[in-house]
Image 1 (cartoon, rainbow, N blue to C red):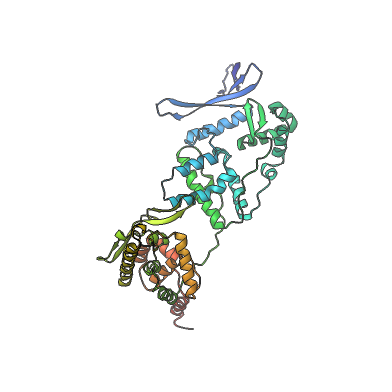
Image 2: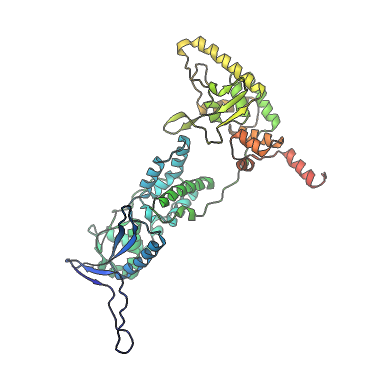
Length: 466
C-alpha cells in the first residue's frame, strides 16, 4: 500500500524563495487490489483514561474526504462531534422506554405515543434520523396516506437503488459514476446514509434489501393533539440521546406541530350536580360518588384505603391510586404526581357516608365469612373484591342516564368540581391544592364559567346594560 498526502508543496512567487503550502491532513491510500481511498485522523478530545481520542475516517474520493474533514473538524472544535454508532431508532427508543422510572400508566402512555415512530422509523439509524423522516410520519398520521417511497428518495436515488437490486453482487464506484454521473454519486451517498445501500468494502456498493420491506401499518387520521403527544415524547427521548452523545441535535424540536383543535370541556351546572347527588343518595356506593363529585380522580377513589380515612380528624388522605395498564391489568401504585399526594378535610356528609359504607362492609364480611376478600379498600363489591376502573365508569354512566342528566365523562365531574369552586370565589391556589394540581394548570384547564357568569361579566363591563 502506498501513502502520500493529498496536497504537495508548490513553488511560491518571489525571488529565489519557496513557500511551502500547508499540506492537508488527508492521506491517499492504495491497496494491493488497486482500490484508492482518502483517509484522515481527527482529535475528538480526551478519553476517560486521559489518552487522546483520535478517530480515523476514510472516503472513496478526495472531494468527499475534504468536505467531511471540514465538517468534522468544525464539530470537533465546537465540542459537538458525535462518535459514529449503528444504533437504530427502534433499538434506542426501546432501551429508553425500559429505563423510564415513571408510573406504569405514564409509561404505557409513552409506549403508545412512540409506537408509530418505532413501527415507521424503527430501522433508521438513530444518527441518520432527520426532520424529513418525522415530517413524513406526521403527514401519514394526520392524512392516513403515506408518501410513496419513490417520492421520498427522489427519481435518481430510486433509479440507482433499482440498478443495485438488479445486481446481487453490487457495483463498483466507477461503474456507478459511469452510469449516473456526479449527481448519481451524491444520490448514492444519501442512500448509504439512509441505510438503503451498504458499502461492504471500499468503493463497492450493494442494495441492503432486494425490495422495500413491508412496513408495519401506522394508522392515520389521528388528531393534532395525538401527533403533538408523539413529538413531545420523542423529543424527550432525543434530548436524552443528546446528553449521552448519541446525536448532535434534537430533530423532533425542529418539526412544526400541527394545530390542536380546542374542545370545550363538558360540565354540569350546580343544579345538575345536586340532582345526581340526590339520585345516588340511596346507592351502596354513595360515599364514593360524593368523593367523585368532590373532584377526586377515579384512580384516587378506587385506590382509597380505610387507613387513609381519619374519622376523628374528618380527613381523607390521597396516598395511592388504582389504574388500568395495558398488559398488566389493574394495578395499585403511587398518586399521579407529588401534588396529588394530599390530605383533604371532608364535609360532615362525606364522613357520615363513609361511616355507613364501612359499617355495611363489616356486615357483608360477617355474612360471607371466609369467602369475603379483605382488600382494605373503600370501593369494593359485596364480596370485598376491588371494583375495576371501567366498571366504575359504567356504573356512573348508568346513574347519569337513570337520573335524566346530560351525559358527561366521569372525569368531567372533576371539571365540574373545579368550576364550582372557582365560580364560588375559592382562590385558585386553594382549588389547585384541593385538586392536586399546579395553580397555573388549574386556572388554564378548569376555569370554565356558566352562561349566568358570562352575563354577569358583560353587565359589569357595560354598566348593567342589557
